[in-house]
Length: 105
Image (cartoon, rainbow, N blue to C red; front, side, top):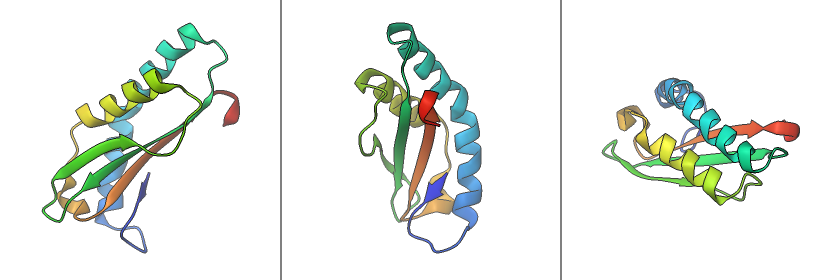
């Protein structure tokens, strides 16, 4: 879990850890669905959760490219979007959920 907009671990970083823990089973489910179509599926996904100055989540989207494929990445973005996260401690920051699967770990 990473956050931007700060120099050292802070309350935002601490509050973001439960988000990663809560969303992990859903991310794994998305990956397993993708593996049904491609048994060799491997790669990293990065999902950015942008929080505005009022502590409201303004967007959830994938960042960069991923070898996991569009359908798996979109499933993972939806999983993060659907997971409850209190952004009030992360005002004006971006929280990154990153997970690596398969051979590229």
